[in-house]
Length: 239
Image (cartoon, rainbow, N blue to C red):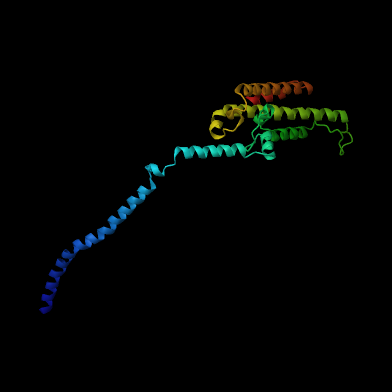
């Protein structure tokens, strides 16, 4: 009987104590949440996710322009010296500044890109079976010096056609069409920098194209082709 009364009293007191303590517990539990929310809000504001960076922390326009001028100066001056002159003649990045118009014209043709085409001509001539040596150490019947000289001359002219003329034409016209992009990305290139005028570039494009087609036709006549196959391939490759 006494135990039943104690259970009854305990059952009444425990809910009362819980109800009395719950506001305090709830309040104390909410404080970490509020503090965490404040910290998260402060972090979000510190990272400026939507570009709301204060003006005091933004990069001043003068500093940005100064960085651009420094990078442009480095691009222009990184090729000073013998290495820069070599890069200029090959038409690659890091070239030194040049005022000689003929060196600038050569730079536009990017001689470094001629190599695969010239190599292709050499391989094609060797694989054709019609190329004669001036003095073949492996074949006594292939030691006609004059015939070998003639074939070597034809091969050399074909290399001039594929390298300086037609490849130079495509590289020059490529730089011409990319002049507006180069003015942003590579302002030190010959055309956007003003090292060569637009009229001189257009003249070079036509001179290389027509000169290359003329050489191609001359090779067809020299080789006595019934159909001008070299000229046809040159026209097809140029356009």
